[in-house]
Image 1 (cartoon, rainbow, N blue to C red):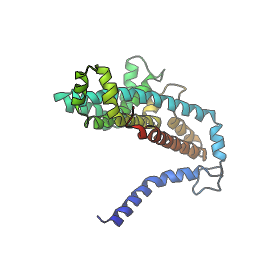
Image 2: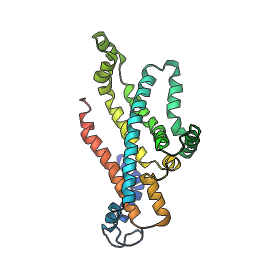
Image 3: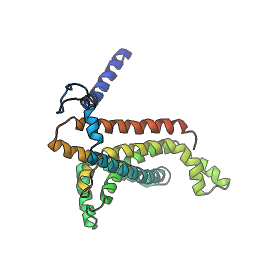
Image 4: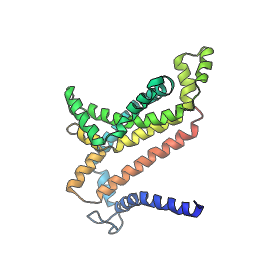
Length: 260
């Protein structure tokens, strides 16, 4: 494949992926009263309305809190599972891999329905956010597992054995040797978990408790009765927030992967 042809091909793919995002961002500056494209003049009017809308602000705080909790839980479980998968699973390696990736194989709506039956069967119901967090962890766990497993494949167990021969305990070996080396996979997996949890709709919609709404749910409820550029402003802020998480993680953590 020639370089010019490959360049044009990549540009077409990028345009196909980014055009819908660009349309939403441009539409958020619409000065008109309805969500239209191209916009009827440019204005920050709907951003002011959005930032003064306490319902949306509360939904953003809820989404951020759930995403942070999900990231921590998925990071711990996914990292532990990846270490077991690479070093200790033996003949069960394929079974462990399939079990960890199973949530990616099923439609999200089926997983949500199954979890809904589960939380009611154990007496939790949807009175708390416990069921929603379980669902978010279940969906994001494979991404942590995949990233950490990829980092673990290049890890030589003899390094831990050498540290053990020098008197290092199990936790010291993990903290001082293994974790710094697999840190890129852990960071990448946790980052994926946070972003995916922040944007999950179906799981959140099925398992949310009364009076609690994440940002995707609140935006869905809003669009059922309103069709103003405020929805585009909300979507744009969600896009910007995701980009900020990616950039901060890359700048603050990605450049220091060689240190711990």
